[in-house]
Image 1 (tube, one colour):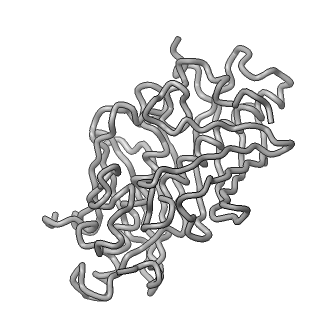
Image 2: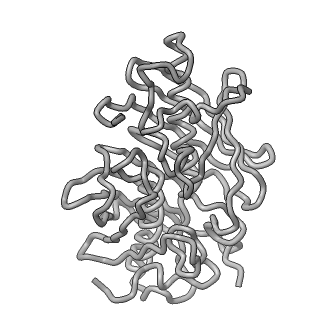
Image 3: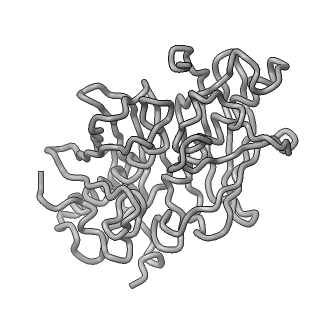
Length: 156
Length: 156
C-alpha cells in the first residue's frame, strides 16, 4: 500500500465530500489505496450506523462503495495515463451510477473491508467492481460507473 | 397523504435504522407516505451532506432511496394483502439490491422530494422505482428490490 490515500491527492476544492473529503469534519473520510491490482479501503462503522440491530446500515455500505469507487477511478485514470496522482489537470471522478447487491446482513462492530477491481478505463469513464467483506466473508457487491468531473465543477 | 408515515408502523425492534428508524436519534428518520398511487418522502440535507461544494452527496441520495424503497415495499405489501399497516405479523422489508443513476448534480440547500412507484409485488419481494427531484427537476433515479425480512431478525 502507498502511504498517501487516493483521496489525499484530490484538489482542495473537491475535498469536502461527506464520504471521502479530508476537509469534511462531519463525514466518513474514507481512504483508498492500491493493494496490487486491487484497491482497498477500511472503515469501522459507528454503533448508530445500524440497519436492524446488530447489522450495518445499507445506505452506509452504498456510500462507502460510492466513494471507494470514484477514488479507485481517479487512481486508475492517472495510472492509465502514466501520470503521478495529484498532477494537473486533476482527474477527479463523480458517480454516474451505483449498484449494490446485499448478499447477507453485514455484522456491525468489526472493521469493514472494501475491495475494488477496475473493469474498464476509458477517456472519461471508469467502471469499478467492488466487494465489502467482514472477516473475509463477502457481504455485499457493488458496481460503480464513474465519470470524469466536468471542469466547471472544479472551482478554485 | 396519511398522517402516520410508513416507518411509524415498523415494530420497535426494527426501528433503529440509520436512514428511517424513529428510534435512531443520529439518523435521517425519513418518513414516507402514500400520495395516490405513488409514495412520497421529503428530506432537507444538512450543509455538510455535500459531494462537491453546492451539491448533495450521492451516498445520501442512495441512502434515502434505500429507505424510501423499503418503506414503500412494506406499505405495498400490506395493501396487496388488504391488511392495515402495523398489523401482525409485521411486513418489514430489507434491501436486496439498490441501483441509483445520477442524472445531474443535485443542488444542496432546497428540500429533496423522493417519489416511489411500485413495479412488482410478490409474496416476499417488492420492486420499487424511484425518482429524486429538486424543485420539480429529476436529479436521480433509483430501483430498489426489497425482500421481506426473515423472522429471525425480528427479535422482540
